[in-house]
Image 1 (cartoon, rainbow, N blue to C red):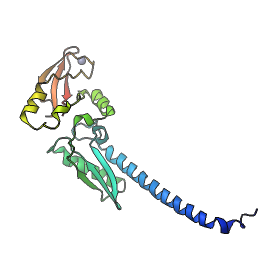
Image 2: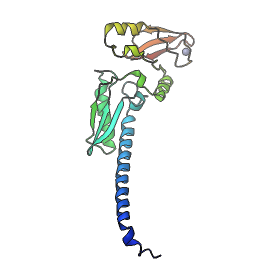
Image 3: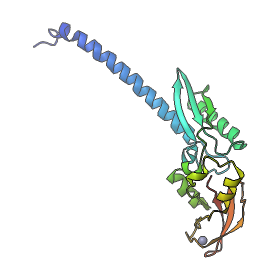
Length: 201
Ligand SMILES: [Zn+2]
């Protein structure tokens, strides 16, 4: 069978598969762009805890294209935190460096960020950095966490950070606020080293 003899018969089919392949390659390129943008934005580090990336913190909520324009959604860690503007600008810069100079960075406050969103890898990095990672947030406190009573309940609840250096749970709290308001200062009674505890929020 000569290849030419089959041409007229295979043409419609071939056209279809070319179109299909093109659609597939466009979709693949699109998925690749989203993945590249997600990686670039996710690799931006937190200005306050530079060992943690936005991906570690879990604040990168969504990466998508609105037509040709890249749109990234973040949920700030602490509302009103001055680091939020720094993070947004750092994300814009990181995306511009990857070829998306007009990327739009939006913030979404709902659902609110919680320390529970910090990845396991992020928790490991915190420990290696000498910060005890936050324990789980008690679910019952989440919906009412802005009220005074809930805050008191949470803060008087037995906190159980382990020493990030020697893992001892024999620790004492020295101060409610450590190097930043979101951390408490503790000291390990086993190795005597002070350390910051990233408070569950
Ligand atoms: Zn220790």
